Structure formats: structure tokens, C-alpha cells
Amino acid sequence: MPRPKNIVILISGSGSNMAAIVQAVQQQGWQQQFGAAVAAVISNRPGAPGLRLAQALGVATHLLDHHAFETREAFDAALMQLIDSHQPALVVLAGFMRILTPAFVAHYAGRLINIHPSLLPAFTGLNTHQRAIDAGCTQAGCTVHQVTAELDHGPILAQAAVPVLPEDTADTLAARVLVEEHRLYPQAVRGWLQSQV
Figure 1 (cartoon, rainbow, N blue to C red):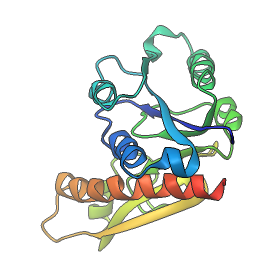
Figure 2: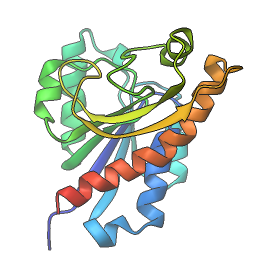
Figure 3: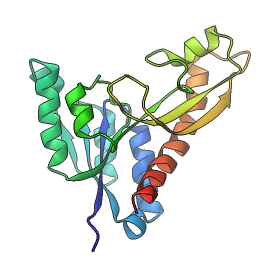
Figure 4: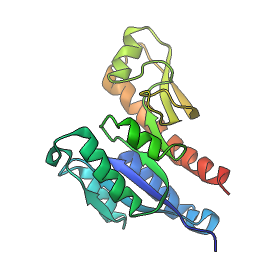
């Protein structure tokens, strides 16, 4: 039997992208096809709605509150230990609102991916939707990429674009992009798994 391809998903908030991936795993039979399963969902924020959502989907959850640690390095070391207890083939950032230390990124090099709500390399960082509107962009979107030490700069795995409409606000544009995120992220994770077969 090939070694199971455990996926660990990190969240900070609602967990909607996490749920899209878990549902794809369950509904598309990834266990049978790739030996893949979501082994755990971990949040750094107490009360993150995504923890309850993951539990409702039958996934093990952990809370590791970053406020309990004096330094970013100490938190990342504890997070690595928790993730590694699940022997992950892939670590997925799904709305995980922490800048990760170089040591953490290096530890998971090649098996750490993120989704960003812009068409990278445009608009790295925060407030992407308002920045796209302010810049007069006719298209916005989302990008799944490998995580490297430089924020939002890793190799691109997949992208999806949406039009920016004349009447758009940051909120309406964000809602349209989020629909694409929920479609694209499971596809990109599946593609990564297929590339490992």
C-alpha cells in the first residue's frame, strides 16, 4: 500500500476554502484515487468558525493560539510539531492569517501551498480587491501558489480570473472572487496530488 497522502489545512477564520477542499476530497473519492485525506484542520484563532465547520465535516481539529507564544519562532516551532504529528504530504493555507518564519517555510518546501485573492504577481499582501479597483483593472481573480520565504511570490500552480465591473466595491468583487477560490483551490490541490502519483 502506498503511504497515505495526508493533507493538513491551516485556517484563521470562516474556513470556506477549507470546506471546499474537504468536500471535494469526500465527494470525489480522493481516498480511493490518491490515498488522500484531510487529516486535520488547525486554527491559530480561538472561536474561528472554520473549526466548527471542520468538525461538522468529520475532520479532526486543533487550536494553537498564537497569543500563547512569546515569539513568532516559538509559535511556528509548536505548529510544525503539531502538523508533523499528522505526517502530512501537503500543508494547505486556507485563510491562515500569519506570516510564517523562513524555518517553517523551509521545513515544508515543495509541499506548502496558499491561495491569494489576486492575479499574482499583481497585488501581493492585503486589501487586494480595493487596490485592483483603484488601479482601474478590468480583471481580478485568485492564485494558488507554492509558499516560499518571500510573501506571495512562490511558483504559481493555478489562477482564475473574474471581470471587475464598473459598479464594483471591494466587497462585491471579493464575493465574486471567493466563488472562484472555492472552485480553483480543490482543483489545484487535486492537481498537486496527481503530480505526486
